[in-house]
Length: 193
Length: 268
Image 1 (cartoon, each protein chain N blue to C red):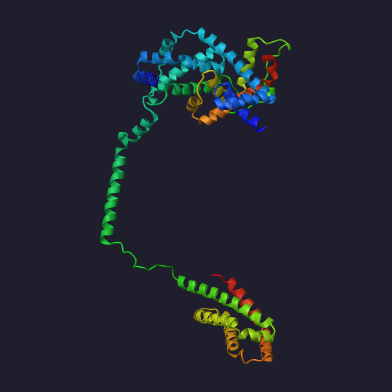
Image 2 (image 1 turned 90 degrees about the horizontal axis):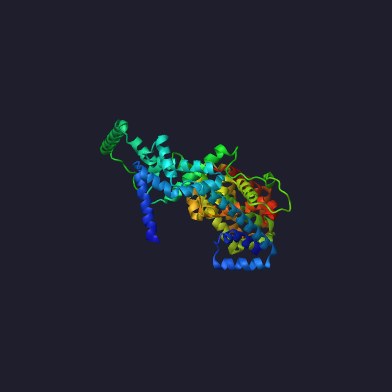
């Protein structure tokens, strides 16, 4: 297992080295390996296929540009996801948010979900709407951590590397994100069940 | 209540299957007995399951993408947009700026300055070797010794006056019979002798410096103690009472207090 990982690691490093010299095939190889992971991060952040595809393209373009800055011995996936995360945040601020600040919290009353008939179980599209809206109400950092943990299934230490913060902070922010989601979703709990 | 708080902190880790066996068992057994925590966990489970709904979305969206052709499309975009490669990392860029050929005359000038400066310093110190001060000699500012002496005299005098004051108070306030007895005892003679020897020590300083008032009063005290020590054995109670009255008439204690205050104020 360890040996397999090392081989994989060396293979990726050799591809990155080739990309530095403008090797198209190597660039496509890297893209092929990581495009799904970047898409997953972007899609779970925006819930929009077109936005996510834009992020994927932008991430690999940025990788091509910055390939020389990647240092040997570093985890490539974490480095690439760090680029993707930065692009996601920039993209969100540019296209979706109006003055949304890092760490802003909003009141539960501010969640405007579509009205539904009481007593009827909700369809999965309604549930999707509720969850995506509630996730959007989390602070940028909490949302990013929740998405990375829940959808990308990254470990706390991997998220810590990507966000460049302590692993303990990631853990506590993830805990807060789940708690805040619970608070935000509590008025709709009856319908979810 | 304390348990609930602890369990609450572990609930998220429990949902993600990250709890150790012992903590997991503790949580499960607590949940069985605590309705509030059970309810809390149920709600968190709903959120966890609810968030899973989005996974289906993600899978559906991913299924519609042509992953095979995407890398080629992105590679084409690199060519089309003429993305330039950052060939230099920040660090190499900095070093390259630092050592670019244009800066060479500057570095040569700095090097020449250092060499010339060292040479001149060496020549100066060779012709005038650095003289170390003589062993044990400390250079102090002018007037420092005088100031030190005055301060020592002042403190010595205050101490002398303090002790004299107590001795005089004992003398004035006790009855002539007890006073005579007291002065005959070893204790009084020891205290008076101490004070007299202290006086001979501070005498030199009082003479030298301008502490005339203090000197006058110290002289009077000295004379009084000296006489008392010498003659106390022959003195009658009547004569001692007279001396006590004399001390009171001359307001010796008041004078001591005033001089002491003056000395304390004039701290150097």
